[in-house]
Image (tube, rainbow, N blue to C red; front, top):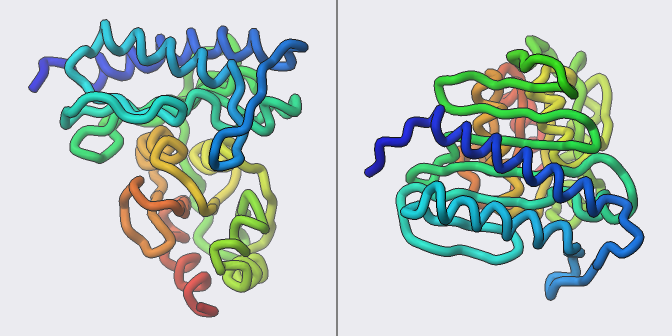
Amino acid sequence: MTDFTLVDDLAVALALAAEADLIALDRYRAQDLDVRLKPDRTQVTDGDTRVERMIRDHLADARPGDAVLGEEFGGAGESSRQWIIDPIDGTTNFVRGVPIWGTLLALAIDGVPQVGVVSAPALGRQWWGATGHGAWVRVGDEEPRPIRVSGIDSLAEATLSYNSLKGWDDAGYLDSLVALSRAVGRTRAFGDLWSYMLLAEGAIDLAGEFDLKPWDIAALTPVIREAGGRLTTFDGDETIWTPSVFASNGVLHEQALATIRSVR
């Protein structure tokens, strides 16, 4: 047990995200960016590894008793409090000069994310949320403002971001995606962290994808839930520890999942 409050932990996460932004922006579009393939054939850059090392080093000082799980360097420590790091979500975008990428940092307590920071410096935006403390966005140098999901209650008026046709197809859900796309008003593929933060801001209403890891989901969870939305697996389970995520404004969640299941 510790005396840290979620507000304390959020302050740590925000400070680390700010430093991560500086490191990542320095490597973004750098002529000497080091890009390699990992065993799973996904890309990793020196930007990814530098950001994650920095976060781990600072957490070792600021929260020495906490466990850490990161995309690039795995798990360390055992504790009911676990920091979960995706140093650069959207690495392919980062490599190719697409500005939709960012650092995801979460604190999970007993496996449930309670603090989440999503920082996308190339978009000039940072989002955060902590249980009981709301969801917020800062755009550039503006003052932070609270965010809230949409009130859309009809699938026919909803906007869905599906991220990747291939991802849904590989998971065996392509027919479900087609059915859902026919039911909603608009479909887009904003991709990666941006889909979920647009949902938290109320700009879109549904988002989902497959082949994910906990570090892809953990930081999104407090932001979406504190903004009034829902985030589950495609089976409706509220966990970050399975490789799928479906998020909504809450009102449309069961309608959308029912449509997805109707053709399976």
